[in-house]
Length: 300
Image (cartoon, rainbow, N blue to C red; front, side):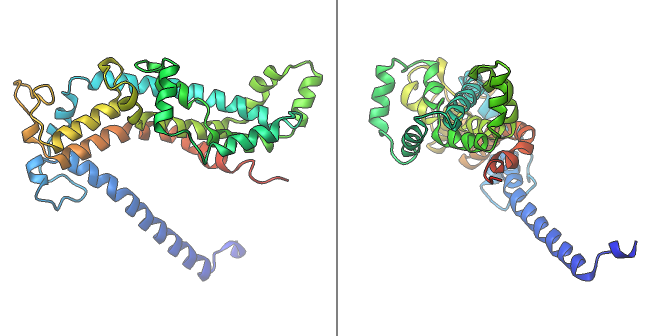
């Protein structure tokens, strides 16, 4: 139909819009491809510079050096476990607290919400935090990775804002049908909150996967509780400082490999090892992300 044809101004807008988005795509994608290219490039050649999005001398030696490190598999298993367990417990606990604070019939709603917001601005500090973990007997245990981060004020506020947008009549009608608060939460509220729960699940998972400082503080003396990020940090530190520790890097012949790699190549290979697992998870949660962050922000 004639009336459905685009005018020159619409076509010009589409051209500018697509051109701008293409530039944004290239600017966003280039650093990732550059890191990948450097991680796959021969270390001594990397020092020359000038690598763009393709490796000049392809090699897997950088990754081989990383994966031959003694505690890497143990760290990978612990990081995976803390990410899965921490995400599940963090999402459930945040949703339960948010559900309580979203209830209009909860008399302490304002007081608890105020205290919750204050924790976003003030904290006890590093030393009191360590003393608390010690007194709770969480030092040198796996649960020090999970329990302290179960309740996060920022995540609770996001979930509560979403729940505030749900009609309270749903809960009232369920109560009239004989459902208790627990049944309302699990069977009605949680299914409706899938977008926002997927959003905070992504936040928690990324935080758990990338965390290494808590390993350094609480479990650095226990190799069986090490994490992937902590081990990769030590590899990078050893490479940067030119470490000759016999247990740090060994090639297939049992010889030192640290001298054959450059800090830049190892740094990029480590970046790829830490990024790829999150990239594999992100597409499954991305479709919920925008919806979860915006729904509940506008009240009718």
